[in-house]
Structure formats: structure tokens, C-alpha cells
Length: 60
Image (tube, rainbow, N blue to C red):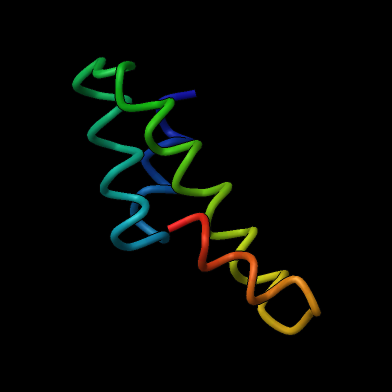
């Protein structure tokens, strides 16, 4: 599993460095923060072209 994580980290740039940091440093407390950031990113990307776009900005 370690080889797979290293190859993912090498190819992914900044996100890969974050994954490697969490994996090697055993800093699992960062996992919920990363998940929330990913969910917010997905929400903004997919809803930016819809009629719900004005309501996204009220969340921030």
C-alpha cells in the first residue's frame, strides 16, 4: 500500500504532498478537514452554472 500512496503523491502535486504528509506523519486529525474542503470544492464547481449559484455564496 505504501508504494501505491507514494506513486499517487508523486503524480498529484500539492494534493499528493498533503496525502503523503497525512499518511507518513500519521496525522489523521487532518482527514475531516480535507474531506470538508473537498466537499465544498465539489459543491462550488458543480453548482456554479446552475440556478442555485446565488445561494452558494450565502454559505461562505
